[in-house]
Image (cartoon, rainbow, N blue to C red):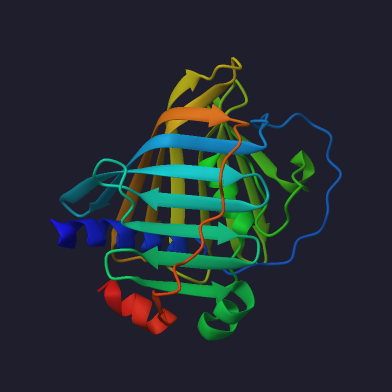
Length: 263
């Protein structure tokens, strides 16, 4: 049983690393004034009961956990298979990534500059935040989303918004109620792609319609991996604790050692 728990936690880590694997491109500021999908307004976003489903080929595993976000600051995913007991955690800030394996009492931590030098991949916090909170975004350019940044094509009742910056392509499907229904990122020159779609839209306490299911699919051109995140309850603007220090008794591992754990 512990082996399957460990697998679930590190599958989550794989997605955290893979989602960030599109190479960052520089984009210019835009000044479009046309209407774009509204965004959820919040300072903190809390899912005290989430279900993570990891799907690969014909196999799937469900595990409970939590999602916490302090806007433009930190994202924490906690894996808690039994009675709220945490077995693993992954956190992302604007500056670093931390992964804690409580089963084996070890952790990985690196700032984005170090990861960039070691892997050649530019990792970005804001893409994570937007995907988990049903927001439109331009990769590596937070706060500069304007309609003039996109080309728009009507497909039935959907609008396809697309932007291409030096081979990095982002696509969003927007319905006639101005909701982001799905998105995709890929590089023209590489087989890697990531897609996400939103389902189970329900009203929050504020009356805002928000998806309670996010399906994230990562493909390397040969295989697909999927993580579904079901939000069983969503709380906004609650006072949350984001202080999760790593115990001093834990052993720090390198990125190479972390990836070996995932094999």
